Length: 448
Image 1 (cartoon, rainbow, N blue to C red):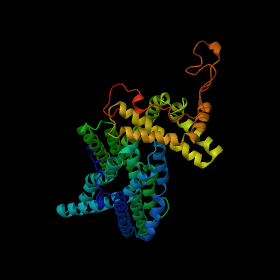
Image 2 (cartoon, rainbow, N blue to C red; image 1 turned 180 degrees about the vertical axis):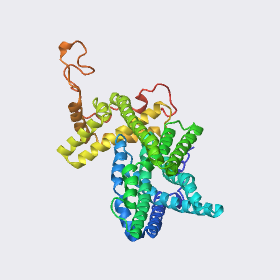
Image 3 (cartoon, one colour; image 1 turned 30 degrees about the vertical axis):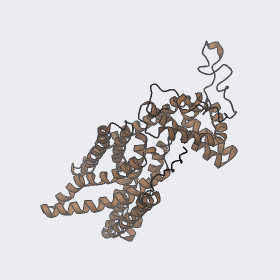
Image 4 (cartoon, rainbow, N blue to C red; image 1 turned 135 degrees about the vertical axis):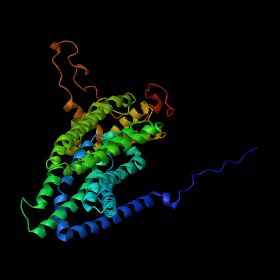
């Protein structure tokens, strides 16, 4: 007896508030309203002329800081929309929360204790660090939760947190510099001895990295949590919280340095801020080098499967070779080819990190789907990228040692020259092996 085929089943349609364009529109509206409100508040406190002066001076360190964080993120660059969101959140939403909450808490303490001076000190050393660091950490948390695919390690946490803090410091510097300019207008001071010059020197010249340094500790906590397996819920919650508490503590120490005596500020700056800045800079650069090592270690499996050329793991694991490949593509095929090479490099790096997480048991349920997406993206750009990558491999390959220096003088390369075995013939689509061909040390739940 013949039976009718079952009716096809479709996933339920999401509610209107679950649609992507609704969420994006709500987020943009929230940030825009926050920006308008914070603009009005800062202008009210500084005046129009003070606001313009503060804006012109506060914008000076922003390009340098953003460029520094972008440089750190060059190994596996995240989407620019994430950085735009983080900067906007820090400059608008976090700044608005901080101004409103700090003002309310300081006034309440002054009214309760009848000690305005003590309330200002308590607000700067206790209330402000807690409120400001929590407001900035909210952006890192949102990216961690809703852009998890782009948040894979410590460098991502540092970049997201640093750009958020850069936006917050930008708005705060406008307020401080504009207020200082208004004070100079009332007292008639000008030149080097003015309050504006002193504020500019302290906030823009000496410590433009202060707010990014505090919030980067929170970002490191989230980045370390991203490296853990999903089943370790307690550690994944404690690491970001520990980073946030460290950020609050360093922020409180920095704000309270003015009350430590005549040389308290310089002592805290020299004993804590500069060493912490140097240590975190070393940590991030070391982590970036480890990421390049991960690329060189993980991609040879895809060479064996036929997806990548033999020279590509070496090129993709070297920032100099990557730059040479992009320059070669731009010189010989124009900007579209250079853009394709940059995208190829980014996708290959993401593929290496994904494979590392899979070997360590930290891959999600969509491991196979995500791997296939990245491999397809590489395959679509191979014609534009491979000539440039092969050129970079030939340029950056170590020079061969004369054979009379003993056996093995050529290192890992064959005697006919480095990368002489690289084939420029595209691999046919039927050659790459399926996912289960790639060697894993032990069975994983996501294997076929």
